[in-house]
Length: 96
Image 1 (cartoon, one colour):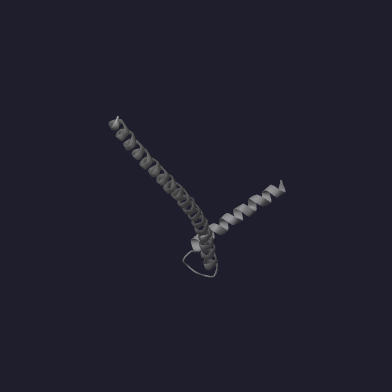
Image 2 (spheres, rainbow, N blue to C red):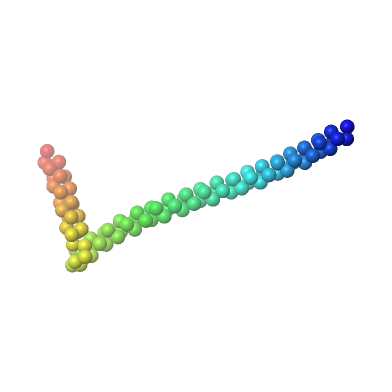
């Protein structure tokens, strides 16, 4: 009978350790989920900021070209031509 009692005690101890380990892992999992959410938010914010900065950079390149810089004249001409085509298309739509 005492052998069975020892086995039961051993099983109880192992089960308690497993329950403690599960709780610890659940806590770690929750912490990691929170950290992941924060990281995803930071990444989204930074992506939006990068897009805004790219747009500003393109605008500055065009403005610099219009001010007489020789570096980006080709890009500026292409952009102006594109804008003219868009305006012509809008005028054509309004005419119809």
